[in-house]
Each structure stands twice: as structure tokens, then as C-alpha cells.
Length: 286
Image 1 (cartoon, rainbow, N blue to C red):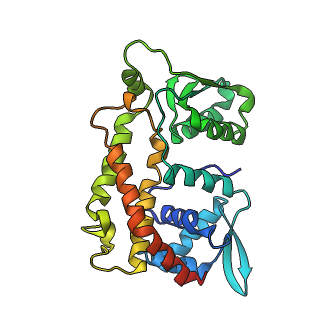
Image 2 (cartoon, one colour; image 1 turned 60 degrees about the vertical axis):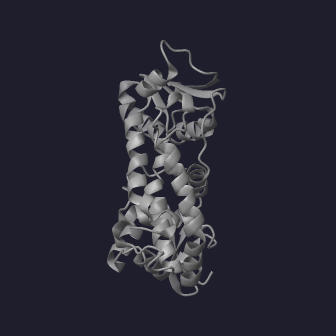
Image 3 (cartoon, helix red, strand yellow; image 1 turned 180 degrees about the vertical axis):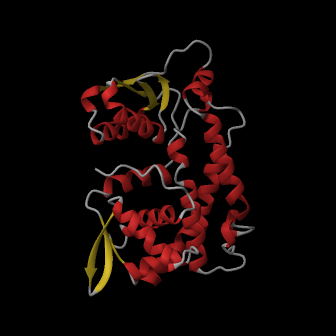
């Protein structure tokens, strides 16, 4: 089982490549020629040498497998990459917010000191999917994340050391909002939302300034420009719905920026996604 890569920094060549793969490779039948992949990354400002280096790194992570298609060097998705990409689709394109009456997932585990490396990985992956730390060995997440919790436990081979509960709303001393602020790093999540708004907000509806010298659609309405802007928007957005667990409004500050950030991402998708897909078809012939 391939778990999500926690170390790809948004905006890096490797992260942009993973975003391109996640967005388009399944629609291409799971296979893409190396030359086409290099050309697609070129639209993002990545030089051919940097593109090929990133492809090698992603291959080493187990996401891509080399093959030859009609005499051309190509890559296909690894056979077990599908669940990770499907999980990413659900997070990126179907943001889900916990309701006040929805169930919660509690994860209790105990790992001995000689397995501290695995314990560290478990903590990292639980935090990555948006779980909050209640106490040592006890984590909480919205109930709709229970399947992702189970996948992590199985992938790290610690299922026998953990117990998973689906339960009602926690009863805490004081307000739930105060407890949530202790269990989750909401300041960090809010900062991610604000950074996305600052980076992409001016380009709402295809106008205004855009990141990294990519032309706005007002300047260049081509599918290639839409592709460059959409991939960068998705790449910047991709970590946010993992870090943000989708807490109910009662657990969030009144000035929570997530509402505006989510709306902006939806607007960008409506403006850019179709043109971006047109560019991919033109490059790959699919």
C-alpha cells in the first residue's frame, strides 16, 4: 500500500509532478510518455532536466513504473497507487465538514519503546490526515475519516496495537472550541488558508495577479495558461484539506478563513479546470 507522501513541498518540482500525475494520469489510461510529461511540466516553468530528475524521484517513491509504449519511453501508475489517488480526490475536491451531531473517530494505541520509529510514523500520518492529539496514545478525528485511519494502521502494521472507536461528541470541561484549540493546531491551519487566499485570491474568475509569473487569463486565455494556473492552485491547495479536519463551526473561531478559502478553490476550479484538461489532451493526444 502506498501512503501519501508527507514530504513534498508545495511548489517544488516533485510536488508539481505529483499533482499532474494525480490530476490527469488516470484519465490518460494510467500511462503517459516521458516526453509528454516533460512538456506538461514545461508549461509550469520546469526545465527538462529538472522534470526528468523529479520523475526519477517520484519513481523511487513507488508511484510510477517505467514501460515502453509504441516505442516511446513512458511511465504508468504503480498498481497500488489508485487508493492513494482516490483518497486525494475525495479530500481535494469534496471538502467535508463535520456536523455537530456526526460521530467522531477515536484512536487509542500503545507501542513499546523499541517500536518508537513506527510510533513516530503513526503520529505523523494521523496528523497528516487531520487527526488531533488528545493525549499520548489517544487521537481524535471526524468520523468520516475512520477508513483512512484503518488504512494507516494496516499500512504501518500496527493494527493489533490500536483500538478504533466511533463515538458521540466529546464531553469536555469548558467549551468544545477551547478543547479543539488544544487538540489541533488551528493557528497553523488558519495560516494555510490565509496563504492560499493571499496567493490566489487576486486571480478569482481569471483576473488579477497570479503566482510565479504565470500569466493571468486576462493576459493569456490559452488552455496552456489555464493548465499552468490550475495545477499550481491544486498543488498549493492539496495539503490544506488534509491539515484541516473539517471541524464543525462550533469548534472554530468566528473569523475562520477556511470558508473563503474553500469558496475560492471552487471558483478557480470552475474557471480553469476545463481549459487545463484541453491542454493535456493537446499534448498527449488523448
